[in-house]
Length: 391
Ligand SMILES: Cc1cc2nc3c(=O)[nH]c(=O)nc-3n(C[C@H](O)[C@H](O)[C@H](O)COP(=O)(O)O)c2cc1C
Image 1 (cartoon, rainbow, N blue to C red):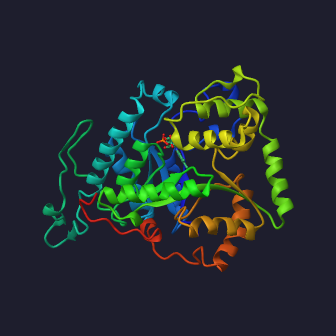
Image 2 (image 1 turned 120 degrees about the vertical axis):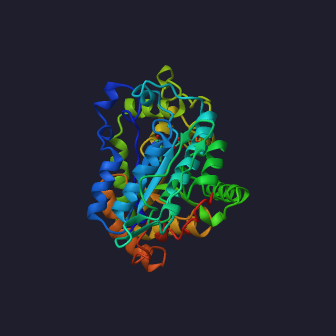
């Protein structure tokens, strides 16, 4: 009874642009998210369906339409993970070069406004379906948008009635200053990378304050840090599972993945050298966690990738179900988050372990639902249905 399932995506092979790496990484083969989630919509009834879609490679009309369709097909369960994309290899599949990060975020802000405007272009009661009068849509209840902006033009209206949940849910994961502002101004959910309780509390407080400064309620944005949970009936078994997985990360791949995360070719160093300084103004969420870890532990390159590459810098929670739940509850109850993006270390076993061992314990403590409260994703997240025209 999770709120949602999230499909991450890029328009290129994941990770370093290197066939030697592709050949050893299962994450390279992936379905196009809308096709996948439309198929999942047909075999599920309550879980939210969230797909990544990039503001750098689509037009707002595409995105508005894709998610509005998925929303109608799923009865109000779709969500858009808004990414601006940073990969050169993605841009190369479109004959494009990406603008610098600050401009990508500026564009994304306008992009999201257009998408919301298009989602709002039909009034809730626009479809009258009056057979006697021969009228399907009340003409005064469908509106053009006539957006002429700095980056985008869109006349509207969208070719689709208003969403059963008002608007599809918007997710964002930027942690840079510009990313946070975009998230606080436009998103319903923020995915974050946090390993430290105090930092997570500060991040959530900052997002809430920014949302309020943008005229929204702090409660309108749910902050969900990633948590890679490894659990088993005993602590020794859980640790053993994690150690076995860690040993499966080949040294050379660990080094390549860390190099890519921090934007430096680490092959020029010895793996036992301290992690060199790197620029943390891009890919801030991951890079800040890596820099904090290396500084705090005085960690070598090898130690850093061993610690962080397996979970892609996210927090790892290892233990018995009671220990895992204690840990998650502490974060939740101390204002570090509104929930978690649970990232099982393996599929399906890691997910099954969480569902079979941790969920009953969470439910016993009143921290996990025992039945869905609503039919839509927005309803299950406890979010208000936005008014037409609301930011
Ligand atoms: C949990 C999570 C999921 C993400 N999913 C994607 C994704 O599917 N596709 C993508 O291109 N970027 C993805 N990102 C990257 C973010 O959209 C963003 O580009 C990154 O966090 C850097 O932004 P920042 O510099 O503002 O922190 C994800 C980030 C996080 C933390």
